[in-house]
Image 1 (tube, rainbow, N blue to C red):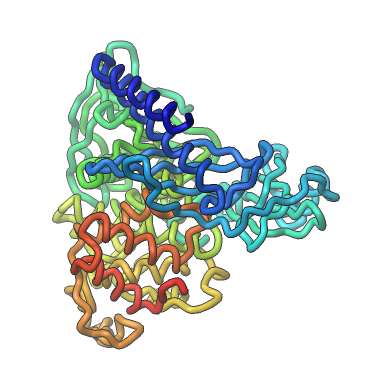
Image 2 (tube, rainbow, N blue to C red):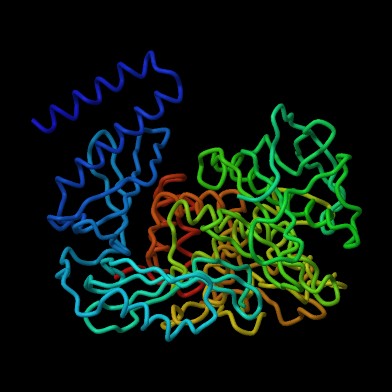
Length: 546
């Protein structure tokens, strides 16, 4: 009966879709896909590691051109969120093809804990310190990132760090003994360490000139309200750029001007770095849209806010889920570091948003390193996509932020040789999940460079300051014959792995599997691209899952 009911629902949905408006048809199709995936979960409890009281909420749906369906589910147990319980159900023609997940057990804890939420707040507060903003919050969850799920309290503290970075720290406190099981910050930075204004009635789209700091004169899409222009991009979901005027709270004010020329290529004009950020985010939008078919951060066509001139001499940039925004500091205004609005940094931060709305890689341990690497990878691909002669593409993150840096000896990260920063490992080794996510990202960055380019020293390197760079120094296993498959193929593989196969708790071994699955989907098992993925992971010492 269940199978008949599912077929009947599908038939009804198909018939309705013939006459429904396109948006309505899309909703009906999505509902049918979710229903099919839910039925498959119900019939494959063991594979889904499902407990009797588990429930699932669909968060994303992807349907391939050949009809293969991928539904991403979040999981609850007796109404409690299961941290690490998310999964992606893969199917075709109503038949299960597989499930991607990090959950290891179908066991569930008893829901009577000895530690209360208030006590958990005290335990977490002892680690957070006293500089918090507002009251902390707590909710009871099932923490399932370990070998066996346990009852825990998720405590969230908000505050401002000494370097002006906002923090939204999440602590997971064991409800049986008060031990801190894990912690991470939902504010995701480029490196270690509702606003005022908007569109008006009768606003029209306009095209202006941004006289940027790092990218030269660029085209920027804006909005005209009467005789005033606003830095609001109506062609990309209403994404807007705001001036924080050196504040660290609020959303600032949207940039406005009597002309449609923004900045003067110098720091003397506050609009200059606004033009950089506006252009960088717009280019990132175009990259995801034109290369991967993704419409904005959440794939819903909605733009986000970019905030510039954040804080005083703030030398970082970050993505925050709570404001759905990218934020850029001014550095020290060029004394040693420029405002952090270079295009690869803008691409990096917006890509954090894409990750948060797809795999939602936890910002801790190996998954946190993969989260950071994803932003470096797509930030780099955006820089190449821009094809701007003022900032040619490269595998160096943030090189435009430093004065007098033609040889790129200063940067945030070097993807082809991560250890050049003095902290990031080139090769995978046990314990990598215990280091800062900005450093553990190095292995995935290194993998991606080798996948795209092979064991080849980048142009402009290998001499002078970089004389020690040789093909042998770029691989961990001596495979200097490793050949790349090009940026386009490498980017498509990583994007599909992120959006179709990775889950919140994906580690390096699982990322290897995810990218091999993605290569199989896109190019075929045993293809040159598949073999290159396998060889590139081997070249950074990430072994197959045993």
